[in-house]
Each structure stands twice: as structure tokens, then as C-alpha cells.
Length: 354
Image 1 (tube, one colour):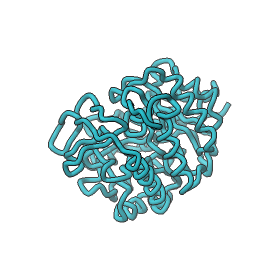
Image 2 (spheres, one colour; image 1 turned 120 degrees about the horizontal axis):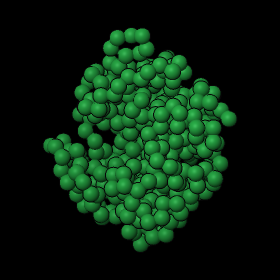
Image 3 (cartoon, helix red, strand yellow; image 1 turned 90 degrees about the vertical axis):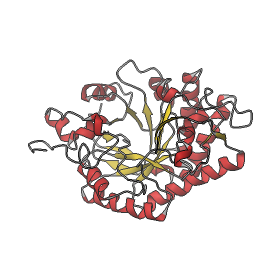
Image 4 (tube, one colour; image 1 turned 45 degrees about the vertical axis):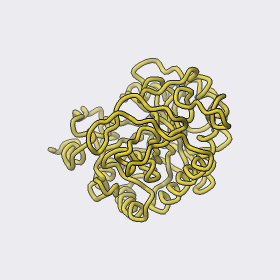
């Protein structure tokens, strides 16, 4: 079986190792929602990863809902991302852009007073991190069929912009309680039309987004992230196994570059093994992996690569630290989602002071 340091082909991507950098929202884009030089430094520092998946990036104004996160729906954002990808490629890295629509997990404060949207008019539990502090989530507007098509078009346009900005591909964010996930689960989708009800209908929006994106940039440059867990962001489904195995079966028809599955490795994996039995393409895991756990899932043939989150935040040279057995830097959670250089680009490489 392969090691984490062996190369991997994922669609059109020829990757130098199987240690991927997970998508990590870091909130350094500022109020402009435009990527900047500090972000270019951050990503290029971590270019030794087999593949970097960018922080979640809003596909539209109505899809936005996280302070200081970037977008990919304007020409200025596209041009700024091009400077980031140029820096990454010059450092020898490869990077895909994660396409994000937050759905009901946004707030009118981000949307000029407009309601956020979702599959159904059901408010999420908890609070939004709004521009004016934490506020309860509001009841969203349920997307009409015309609005669903317009949203699918937004995913496609964002994917086209991503390729124009020099990304090696995109990852569609279908996980973590955001818009696509809101359509997938019967806890957030109570529609009675062809986008709600039985599993085959609830998966329809996901598949139509996949079809639109792959038609524009090719399946070989398109990945997808799913999270077959209950509880995270208060998301629930009555039958996770049936939902996500059905999705895996349908995704086999689309020849994606990879399927990225978030299911925590700190406890026995329940749904990922069932998906692996069905899904024929490259599968990547994420959440609570360390080096030993990651190598074991490769040894067992369960996954083809593993994406690391917090370890990559604190260790820009994570691949070499793993290779040499060097100790890891300690992460500083207080700076994960705010700040500038501190806790972002100032983590030391091996043998160097911060």
C-alpha cells in the first residue's frame, strides 16, 4: 500500500504526496473580501502539501456570511486570487479553490438586510458571527426553482473564475451544514418538490451543481467535499448511511478528481467505509488525523490521501516534519479566525525561530 509520501494522480492533478492541506477559514481578506499579499505568503509557505484546498470562498454576495472571508464573484477578487496562485506555483505547490455558499448560516448583516437562503424556511440553531457580534440565526428564505437555477449558475461562474485565476481546480463545498448540505439532509430540507422528500430528490441540487461545474471546467479538475456526520453545525439526517452511500453511487457517474470526506478520525469511522465500498474514485479523509492514523487508513485501503487542518496552520513545513519525525509547533487557536501576521504566517519552519 502507498505511504503518505508517495505521489498520487487525482483527475488532471499529478500530486507529489498524499498529505493535503484542508480548507481552513482564516479571515484575513478584510472587509473588501479580496485576497491580499499576506494570504499569498501564507499559502506559498505551505506549498509542500500534495494539494492545498483553499479556505472556503463565497461564490456570490448572497452566499457570503463570514467576516473577512474572501469571495470569487467579482473581477477584483479573481485578479487578486491570481496573485496568490502565482505565488503558490512559484513555490512548487498546487491548489484548488473551495466554492462556498453558506445558505442559512449567513445573516442579514452580511447581505444588506436581505434574508439568507436555504432549502427550506428553517432557521439553524445557534448564532451567526455577524458584523455586529454574535446574533441568532434568522429564518431563511426557501429558494424557488428559478433561484435554485440561478444559484447553480453562480457555482459555475465561480468555477470559471477560479480557473481564470490560475487555480489547478476547484472543490465544491457540500459539507459542514452549508447550502448544499442543507439540501441533502431531511433535518433542514422539508421541501415537497423534486428537490425534497426522498433521498434521490434531496441529492438533486448537489448533482446539478456538480454537473454545472464539471461542464464548465471538466470533471478532472473538480473535487467535492461531504461530511457524513450528525451534530456538526447542528446538522442532522435520519439515515446518514443511506444518504451518503446513495450520493457516492451517483457521483461515480461524474468522474470527479476526488471526493473529500470529513468524518472525525478520533472515533471509529462509520460512514466513510460504506462510501469507500461504493465510490470508485480518489477518496480523501479529513478531521482529527495525525500521522499514524493517516498512514493506517492508507494501509487499510480506506482512503487515498488525508487532508490536515490544524497541523498545517501551525506547521508550514508539515510534510518535512512528518518525514523526519520532528516535533510539531503548538497551534494558537486564539488567532485562527482573526488577526494579521500573528498566528498566520509567523509559525517557524524547522530549525528557525519564529
